[in-house]
Amino acid sequence: MSSPNDPFDDLLNLEEQYYKEGYEEGLKDGAEAGRVEGYSLGLRKGFEKFIEAGRLQSKAVVWANRIPKYQQRERQKQGDASEQEGGVESENKDEDSDARLPPIHSNPRLEKNIETLYGLVEPGTLSMDNEDEAVNDFDSRMKGAYGKLRIIERVVGEGTTSRNVTAVLSSPSGKNENIEDAGKIPPPAEAKPTEI
Image (spheres, rainbow, N blue to C red):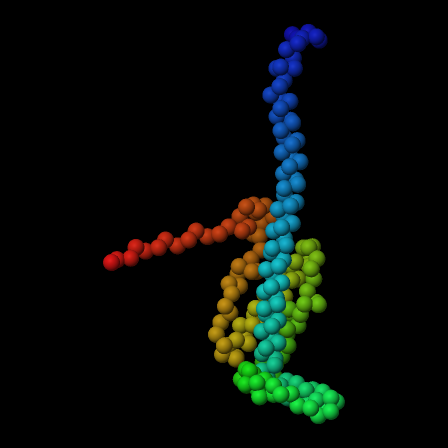
């Protein structure tokens, strides 16, 4: 039994005392580092997703402007604008006509798919909230947009998607996924020795 004034009681409990202090400090530091790391990861992933949405939107705009029906509307707007300015034609008209992409053969279904693609990734309608419902809505809209993109590319005949769709749309497989696994870089492929 130890007496109430035993000078060695504190020495015998040092291990437990240091364990508790280390645990409390680690918990505090880990919580702060987790918030900072989570914030930076969230910004990076959000930026990547919105960059991809912008890329899809720009494709939709370019395709829409290649449809003859929409080109005629644009020419009418430009003609009305030049009449209001006093009928002065642009000196760069020849340069503009050379820089145009060739028109695509359109049909109502293609036009509807292009409009739907644009509507799915329209910047004003995409939520930037970091709530489960908003993130799921964003991801489902992007999946729908990729579906429309594939359909349009097949109809127009302009190759396949150039980005890895699964990399952008991949979401964590579970809530317990390690944050260290989120941005792993695959190892480089081994170079084959060259023969001389």
